[in-house]
Length: 446
Ligand code: FUB
Image 1 (cartoon, rainbow, N blue to C red):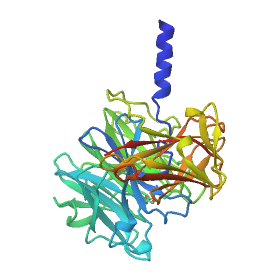
Image 2: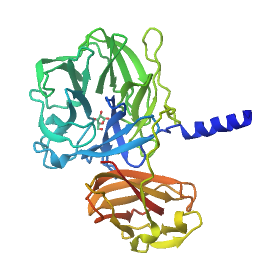
Image 3: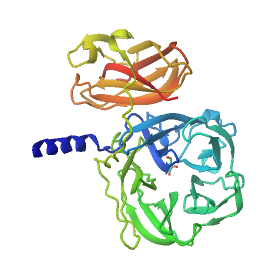
Image 4: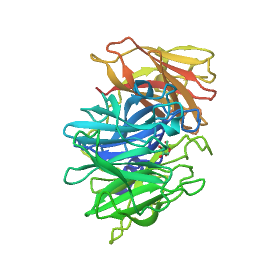
């Protein structure tokens, strides 16, 4: 009996750890985490576009959510630079965002330049939706803010319902009250006094009546996160020092949130891409602990991530499977036999940029809408594929090594839009890496 219990707990343990980074299929950074009234935790990050080119290719946002801190759902793309009418014509530069909820509406705040001279023309745009992670409509920007290097909006709603807006860059951090419409500043923005070595990434939360402001500093090469506290949401602030050290990445950006009785630290590092410069970052989460006097302990950055919160909800269904044998191939790609593949067949040689596999007649359901595409794959090394759905380029997906060319334990996922009915096509194109695909499955979200 004891042996059975310990085997069972080992099994639960192995299946209930998130692993950092917790989003692996695409590169993400600057995670802003919130818990909304549906009981899920949502992360609004920015999206580093592969191949790396500094931070200027970042042209869209995806949202991710979880109910247990381990199983994450890609909610899909919620905004693209091409939708921002006042944005710079060259696009890109969709940097660290945040989201807030008030009176039935979700407000998504994003920094984006309005001109070619990007660092002098920053605006803080606002998009709105009745849902937390879809159907956002871009509107205008918050009037009266400085365009010069002022980025990284964040919004804190106090326990009395009053909303506060923060942003900053270079060495300046400012905060102010938001009007009830959540899109205008009430009065003047003011400098956040008392911060030491402020660089960017302001984030405010409240615990036991104390306001905390966290931010990235200017530590050369690898910024660190510091924090300060106050008895008021607009300061003045008392600086306490570093609570998240170097992450191996030149930028640092994080958010702190309480969920189901634990405090969590969301941040990014570069451990997945392993690139020095160039910004292919990935979001991570670890537990955050406080001392009895309210001080934040130095966050332990782990590879194992956080444990699952046990929920009663059933696991997400596996979705509709589209097997290798039903696909069309070209450019040297072929259907091979393999005992480890589902149905005994898999797609091999998806290597070069002219190699492809296409799944036709993919069912988008009666209404169409958001659908998660899962690619079940194998590869001895870290590979990538380009995903096209109905001809739309959804960019590169990371197919992590499974340790062996025919160990089909890998799964890369991305949420895309499908049309109603069975007229959809999913096409995977090679990216100079050796990946094998067992099958593709589709989960309809809407
Ligand atoms: O991701 C683009 C920029 O890098 C963010 O706005 C900054 O906070 C830094 O993480």
